[in-house]
Length: 428
Figure (tube, rainbow, N blue to C red):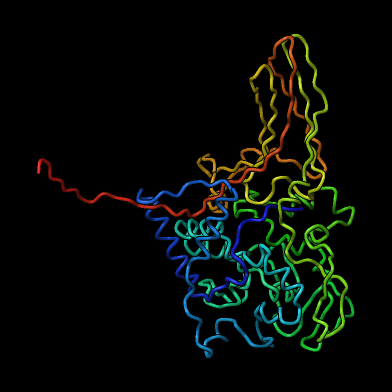
């Protein structure tokens, strides 16, 4: 039950909220200039060079000076556990070192800092204002549901899907998408550990934290008009795995060697639930299998049957934002030429005017209908048949390849070189 890992800054490159305001303002300016034709912002395949360029740009930006010591508490840089409100993940990380190190490189930790989200969010803000702010931030900065910090002024809000958000959830109400989580911040921290105790805070066992419903409140989005936009949780719920007791956490938070707390605090271990959520390309590659099950050549015709199987994903492939898709490409090499046919697996959304929605923010803001959806369901086998015109004789080489395609909008540095004037003399 996986998705790709997108490029993010290192956790050590964290910045105070003022830098985020500056970054968002710059993004708005760039997007506005793009609309006027002064700068070019174009689709970018998620190639290693594009990722490296984006990371380099982010790392070169000089962070503003740190806030005065007296201001740190109000932006969330508490020096100890907050008994009445929310505590910074950095405080949690002092004792829960292995868990914190796993979380800090996750998409949860970078839910606000991901450059792909940044651009999509600024586009949504430009078009829908406060509606987009409340829609996007209730999952990308879920503490806003409790503290109302929709301007992202507090440090704990800017930590994204943080330790203290998840571990202060007491209930999930999927029927209430505006406020699906019931939160009780303070000294009681909830987890799947039974009979646990801590010298620093209270601990409560929570069966909810081991259930997919905990994830479903964010990893499912049904538009107010009823259009299913992102349905990862529903895809799992309607598949074969719930009956087998296999939850989202079984794949995304597997047990691994590590200490729950440092040994100077308490003896613990030997395993922890990984908090990086295992969103990487290796698990993505393990989701689907492709096999050529038949290739029949008769006279000048080659008939090919290929089966695509969802063998490793508890939800549809691809899942999440509908702009992602899978391509099946079948090629035949014959006589120095390459013949090609393909299939595309994706969900296509449209607005109320039947305009297909290609951008991420458009799907969230304007989806009114599902035009088509031929994605691969959990454990589904999809048989695809192809017919090629080929010579009567000669060797053929047949190939079937599955490719994951996602074309998010990323900021790209564009050099502007404009000739302003010219002067010349000749015949001197």
